[in-house]
Length: 154
Image (cartoon, rainbow, N blue to C red):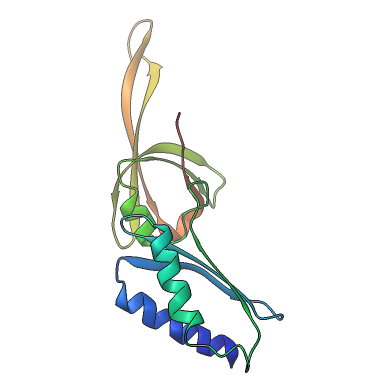
């Protein structure tokens, strides 16, 4: 019951702010609420405060004691939502497939079903000695991805 009330308040807040979307939502047995959000344009502290207030101001602590934590998805967190892939087009991803293959490349496209990674590699020349730079790409279905993360480069 308490979880449903909180989820409804969260859904209303996210409907009001269509640029924000939910990554995870948990209510623990001790009524600790943990919400992780992301946004098409990133997440500001003000966005977390907006979601927090939308929930906290509509719950009665006299009725139900709770703690509330609203966080933004971290840069090193795995991608779990299609909108996260779309907002990271142009960045380098490391994708582990369910076949245990790891592919690292620039995310150049993301649609409803798949992502497209592109990268360059050095391969032996077809004829003669030496190597040649080859452009490669892989189209990967979301349901074939076991884990995907943005590669942070310094």
